Length: 482
Ligand SMILES: [Cu+2]
Image 1 (cartoon, rainbow, N blue to C red):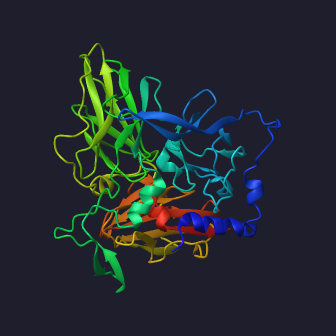
Image 2: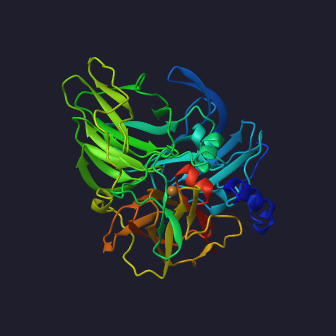
Image 3: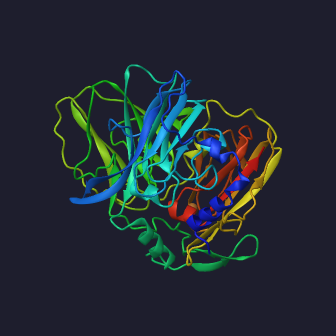
């Protein structure tokens, strides 16, 4: 079985099929180009962080002044130069944005990776604002924290609110290749897979536990990070007593989903994956891999410290940041919650309603995508095909309303991400509704989720599970139209 990385090398060898690649990203010599908007430089760098008292070498995506990622405004062009300062090829994907396909940052699909010491230029309009992020789509670099926030301000942002970005990540001292090899060897500490007959009658490795418990967290991480720190030494953020806060929570983890716990604070969820939803109040919100939550808070007037925690699904491990209002003492928070959290469900998803839904319209084309795999062999696939460059793209046509019916036939939840288009969740388990507009939706085991999108951005686009090792094992395909 080809790994995705091997496959991508094959795709690059065949990249003459995509003659526009060379023009897509303009590795330039730094010549001025007459455009009035200055170009933001992002450098891909190696650096050291300390986790659990030990030094670790990871990556970063930073501006020359040290700022991680980009904060910009809707309506401004996204004019960026990415400089590769690491010793291996890399390419950055703008997660949730809708650039021309050649600027989408998926090696072998959108274009070639940037070689060491090379650079690539990006320039496209920003159609909408919200909380987005960027990450390497090259190999397993995302596991080494090659990711950063991408915040686009728009008219929803209030001048009287303090913005707090919380990037969640899972961290291991083991190199990602070693983690992946362990998974391939059957290193999953969970119960062994049981072969079951899938809906299509083929034999597929499925977990069929006694209580059909989902199979969670198949990588055992050394730490969970919020803004690169653990709860042993968390980020402590001053907030105004009585003030307004907008939490922008980004789950940049490779494999881990969480429940966000606000403690005594009442939150108001106002957007998912950057797109506005009818506000949902609560103190506990689920976040799958690659998703974002915008949560408004009003800080009480009395001085106090308020942890904002992310509890790993199906586990007690937690991470987070501490908000402090006034002169409140900050007490140490354990990195273990009192009780294990549950697995993520679709309970919130089915309650979400987009504030700006897609225009209601009958689908012109429907693709059914069975989420398939073999846990024992750690092969993950779509419609029982583990991706290689020879897999034909799903056909769609410009201007169509497309629906993707995702049916999870495996024992693991899969956060499914479509590149280059925002989509709307329009059905869960046969029940139609005008759900959230977003870019990543969780499909738990045995569930059926339907998303709709408008084919309004022609090109070759990736569609895949955002669990890093599932993606690398082949749970990936493409869509293509001109
Ligand atoms: Cu998956």
